[in-house]
Figure 1 (tube, rainbow, N blue to C red):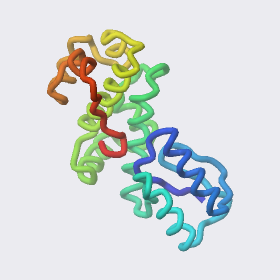
Figure 2: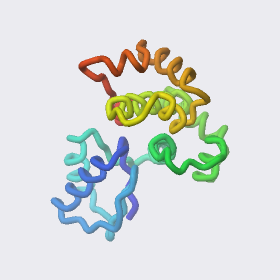
Figure 3: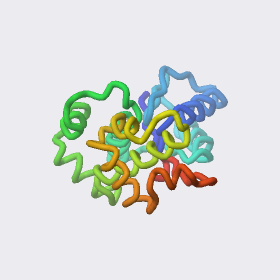
Figure 4: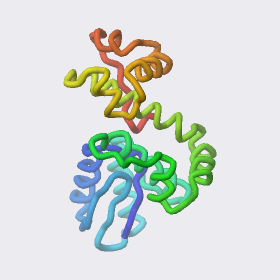
Length: 186
């Protein structure tokens, strides 16, 4: 049985779900970002118990088809932003349409209607958090980060970063307390 999970955006989220399933004695086939597959169909009580356990980590089981499609869109976007090493050489709109077998216009309108933000704004918010993460790690220069995240230049990255956060990347780097937002809260 395939089950979709809202806000499941990282490896630690996958571990939370795996642990919850294990505690409930539910046999697992696989766990991916945004979805899990179990060997058997879950009863309503098992779904409720699983939902209670994963809610503590900000995750939630999705029942409605609307939420499932939004999570699929979010999953593709998160993988696109965070898997910077092997990005396809096609436009993101084409990639999203191919991944979900729906027109980009439909997906963009649907996402905006349900999430009250555009796909572009969501991508920018994710990229800003990824930039913060890479700055905190301190392994890459701003130019390298710009290249990794498909910015045309370090200046473009810096401009967008300042527009969103109110800080330049170098000012953010100098802050003692790094302010990050979890993917679940974007």
